[in-house]
Image (tube, rainbow, N blue to C red; front, side, top):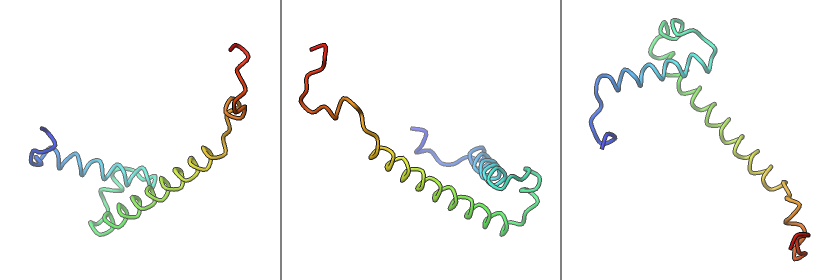
Length: 86
């Protein structure tokens, strides 16, 4: 099982590259700009970007749930009436 194996250098490199890309896309920066950050700046930027994504995701889920509650399907409002083709 691959998920139980220990991290390799390639896995760590992919994690770092993904994190750099995540920060770059969130802040609309170039990869070289992100790589030029100090480790403290990068860490703070990563945490804030992750928090912003989490809040965005929660709001989207909330909006989706609200829309699901407001959506009516015409056939469910008929309650007991037979369909015309029955």
